[in-house]
Each structure stands twice: as C-alpha cells, then as structure tokens.
Length: 255
Ligand SMILES: [Zn+2]
Image (cartoon, rainbow, N blue to C red; front, side):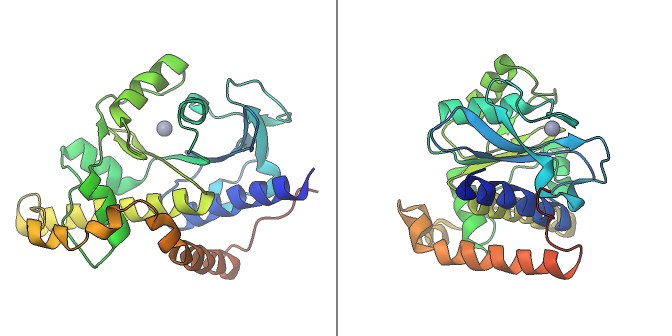
C-alpha cells in the first residue's frame, strides 16, 4: 500500500486510541474514518474477530470500505452498521476528510436531559466556544443510522454544521483532517461535561455569555482560522499521542 495511505490508516488507528483513552469512544461502539483522496472509499475502524476494544485499535483494524458499503479488504472484520453516516457525509460534503461517530457520555446525557450546548465560556476553550456560537444542532431521533435514507434525515438536522448531537445516542463530527475531527469531538464532550456540571451546580442550565464577550471571540468564526490554529491541532494531537504511547502504547503496524 502507498505510504501516504498507510499514514492515513495509522492516523485513524491512533485517533481511535486517543478518543477511547479520553472516554470519547466507549468499549467497542463508535468509529472514526478518513476519506481516501480521489476515490469513493474510506478507511474506517471495523470490528475484528478477536476484538479487544477501541482502546486497543491496531492498524489492521482500519479497513478500506466503499462509501456505499462496497466491502473491500474486510475479511475477518465487521463493517460498522452505521457506515452510512460516514459514506453520505463524504458524498455530500467534499470538505469532509475525516468523520467520527461516537457515543460520548456527557453528550448523550445532555441530549436526554434536553440541555442545549451553548457558548457558556470564553477563553477556557475557544474551539468549542466557536462551535457553540455557530450552534450545535441535535438530531431528534435515537435510531441506528444504518441506511442512506436515515443518513439523509440525520444530515438535514446537521444542516451546514460540522457537528451534530444525536438524541439518546451520541455525536457525529467531521473535519478537514483526522486531527481536527478528533480534537473537535474531545472539546465538544468537554463542553457537554462543563454544561452538565454547571447545570447541577446552579440548579438550571447555564446562560450563554453576554454578547460583548461573544463579540470578543468573533475571530474564532473567521474563515481561515483553521490555518491560524493549525499548530494548536498539531500540538494537541502530539500531546494525546504521547499519552497513548505512555499508557496502552501506539497502534501496532499491519503485519
Ligand atoms: Zn451510534
């Protein structure tokens, strides 16, 4: 396999270990994928016969699959039931290079409690603040997204955003890179945790920041901010990669 493609597979494996290590992915549920440039295929974390869970993802678990479930190289592996989330996003959003579908606990609880994720903090984390200012939509159904039709319904709820909560289910995000999608999901889960903790502490869902403070963060909404903060993505990714290396170890290469 082409070295650049192997690099993409490695990133999906490492991103999965990072997300599982941080509690954003659970034991075996949820999946991260990356678009294979110039094709209608992706690399996606599949479940293998001898499965130990997402925290122990190796490169061999990341298989090449068609957007329409045209199965390739998946002998001994099970393609995720909710593959249409990935395939339909890749088809409809050319800017989507990586997609994550996960069931993070605090996002789940917020949707069950009917508590919106709003811009409740500023400098604490401008990335999730930016997402909250743009608005974080909620898909109101709790069904498995296992068909292109349901994926279309889900994407209608997602609108033009790069993230969407799913009621009684979880979260889906996409990004221009595996690193960006991974970091966005980690930070949205953090926003959900802060929102729930603040709601408990204050006895009611927290209020958004005053407009003057939100205006001070208008820069996070500017186009091109991804480039301006690309070092943030790189450093944060490196930080979490090191934590994986120091705990469960880096993903094994495909033998
Ligand atoms: Zn799901």
